[in-house]
Image (cartoon, rainbow, N blue to C red):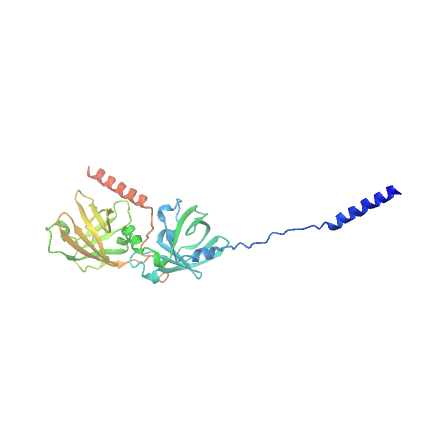
Length: 316
């Protein structure tokens, strides 16, 4: 009887312990992490500066290679392809060059002239993205800015050699009374071109007022632009003719189509005005007058160095 009571007590106690146990399941709160879409990334900044010196790949994407800035607004692509008027053209956005769409982190661009391109986009930092074009293995780094904080002047002066190429010709409009008489007094037109096989500038002694298409170019050679230490708005321009003589100037930009050349050796100042403005890749006329593609500064300098070496070899 005692054994039966003890067994009953054990069963009762076990039952009590079982009834007191409650399984508690703790569920973690689900936190929704906001997903930033590619379109939001692209529109976070009004301007994307194309840092051409950080580009890579042996094959180019023309509309990106041409642009100083790109903008993505309401499905449309805008570009600052020209330095003349940069900051004013299109309210600072430049010209409309096509439209775009996004899917995940793929950017599809339909350019008015160059056609369709698809890029894989990678975020590098808060204001940097990489556009990678798989078919050509070309990579471009874009840096985001707002128009109010973007330094248009720095872009202009860092790329001033392209500005000189944005006009078919530069016509001399004034010569100072000060300064020694010299052969350059007779030159009334200058033309600046991308570095080619024989040179990248030409000059003419044709009379003022000669139509652009009728200019006969008397001389050609190599032009080069360098910085002046401590003088942001002043550059030096060297006209390295395809004969022993060179001309050396201090170059100052007066406005979007006027430059001043001060000839250091003679003390003479010349004013030149651009004729035949070339607007690159306009969506209005559907064509480009001349092909202008940006390249790394090191590449430009290497081409000029090669041209000078070729000239020296020809003279010796």
